Every structure is written in structure tokens, then in C-alpha cells.
Image (tube, rainbow over all chains, first blue to last red; front, side, top):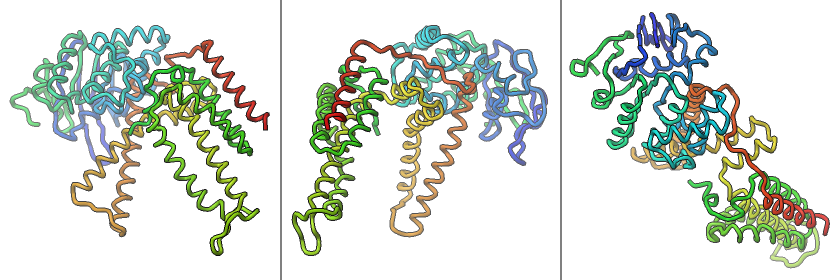
Length: 220
Length: 247
């Protein structure tokens, strides 16, 4: 599904990835760990084509992706949940925000409304359609953000620190939603407990390379 | 900070088609602003007053909003009566109060209140985003519409960020004084807000691209003009045109 081969990347003179390799299969449920600044978010941005590596190959859904239009094809098929929900939710009402992706992918307004209703229902957010996005609580924002990603019917999810700022109850709700879906995903998180409950395989980035990891022997 | 405090009510004024609201407010404002007759300007107040009553807005809050506008008008009252040429009504030492000045100040007061009340009654009773949509339906250039919309959407976020930073400054014992150090601290604060807003705008664009944004916004709700939209719209415009012709 996603293959990264020999990725080199750095900001200015600061080297982040030094020959990083990663292979993700469709049903994988990965937890990505690593210390602050080791490049977890950068890695996701490389997969989504928001950043381009200095060298190395990015293969997603069977094809090598290099240009913006290559990546435009996969966005939506690979759903990406941003760290800060305020970055993700930019429309005033929930219904418009959730419909944004489906409309971009060519659904008619009527189809998009159906998609929104279905997605919100699956996340137990029915009735949120006309709520104002910036007036939602932190937890609600995160769940609605997830809805905006799921509405595009992705084949794989990437979640960047999904539990930051969430209380236990909302975290439980998020876990429940993830477990119920049949989607594969990769979760970046510092929350060991959350990772333990959602991932079946752990990896971490160390010295610019990808390593397998387990929860107990992990350096964080 | 609630900029949409009047938008949540329920009345036929709230439910009017936003395009009608924008067009009526615009035409009314231009006509009232260009009117130089005190009687006509006073009569023009009837329409916004009627709409305000129908929209059942909180009288106290409306007065609060008006007070803000009238602070500026107050300054006019401080200067205009003394500076316009014409017949002297009263003199205090070297200062003389002129009839023409009082007339002008009174006219401006009526005009500005009439226009603001109209904007409150019609534009204030819609969600900003509804108005943004209506603007794009009224062939306002896309770039302007998006600029307006993103300003509104993120002003809250930037406001929160400002409060976080300024609270953090207070927590560390910062007390503003009239000195270079204070000015420097404030300039850092403003600079930091600019940089953060810039970075945030980049992240928002990234998030939009991840959801398939290719430079075009699609509109989910389309408006349909109902019979009463036509009725209210045309009678308001008729009233406005009458104001213009009657003088």
C-alpha cells in the first residue's frame, strides 16, 4: 500500500531521514513512536506529498509518486488527520466541512449530503450537521475532523497525535471508532496506552531510520 | 467574542434570503448616505426600526452596538458646530456655535444610526457564512469572498492565540508601562502572532489539499427565492427609492 525506499530528508542543514525505509500493507494497524523532533509528522507529510524527499522513492497504491498531480490522486484514498483540528476544520458548519472532501472528489451536493449523514451517523455524531465548527469542544472537533477524513471513503488512515488534548471518554470513543472500522491505519502518538489499545504493530524512528519496536523496550 | 450574537434568533427577518438582505442594505445605505434632507433621513429610520422590531432583537444589545458607533459621532459634535460657516446661534468667549454646523452634525448622526440599524437588522441576523455564500451568488469575485470568509473563520483562532500569549506574559509578571521595554514586548507579541498566523495558513492549505482541494470551492446549499423574499425585497427597495425621489 505504502512503500518508502531509502528516503533522505532534512530541513536546511539539519538531517531528519537518513535512508529511511517503510512498508505498509493494506490491513496494517501501525503505531509510530519516536522522540520529539525525530520526524514523525515529517514522515506523514512525505507520504501525503506535502513535502518532497531529497532522494528516495515514495510508492503509494502501486505507483511511484513524484509530482503534485501524482499525490493529488492519492489524497482522499489515504486519509490524513492533522494534529490541530483548527487546521482541519475551516468551514463554519460541520455539514459543510464534512462535505468539503466529497464535493472536491466530484460528488453532487445531494450525494455529498448523503455521505455526510452516513459518516456522522457512523461516528455517532448525528445532529451535529448545523453546529458551528469553531464553537465545538476540543473532543468534538477531533471527532468531526475524523468525520471529514472518513467522508472521503479512504483506503488507509494516517492519524497525527489524535489523542492530544482529549479526555479519557473521548479517547475511548476514538478507539471504539477505529476498532469498528475495517480500515488499516498508522497512528503517531506519545500516548502508550492508546497505542497499545489500537495498534498491532509498532515502529519507531531513530537516528533517521525506521526500526521495529515494542512497548516495553522502547526509548521515547 | 461573539460576532454573530443576533444571528441565532428566529423570525421572518432572520429567514430572509441573504441575497435580498445584502442588496437591500447596500441600496438603502447608499441612498441614505447621499440624502441631504433631515426630514427624509429621519423618515428613513422607519424601515430599519420596523425590521428590528420584527426580528425581536435584544434592545439592550442593539443599544450597546449603537453606542460604539455614536462614540465616533460624538467627536463630530465636538467639532462641527464650531467649524461650519453660517449664522451664529450662540457664542462662548471666542468660540461661536453655528446653525449650519448643528444641522450637519444632526444629519450625520441620523444617517449613521439609520445605516447601522439597517445593517444590524438585516446583515446582523444572518450567519456570516450565509452572507459569504450569498456574496458568491451575487457575483462578488471569488478571491474577495474567500478572503472575507477566512478572515472571519480564523479571527477567533488568532484572538485565542493572542490571549494565550498575553496571559503567558502576565503570568511572568509583565505590566505594561509607557517605556521602550513595553513597546518591544508588544512588538514581539504582534510579530509572533503574524508568524503563527502565517504558519497556520500554510497548515490549513495543506489540510485542504489532503482533502482534494484543487483551488475551487463548491457550494453545498443553494438558495431559492421564495415569494416573501420577493415581497420584502421589493417593498423595502420601493420605500428606499421613495426616499430618494420624495426630496
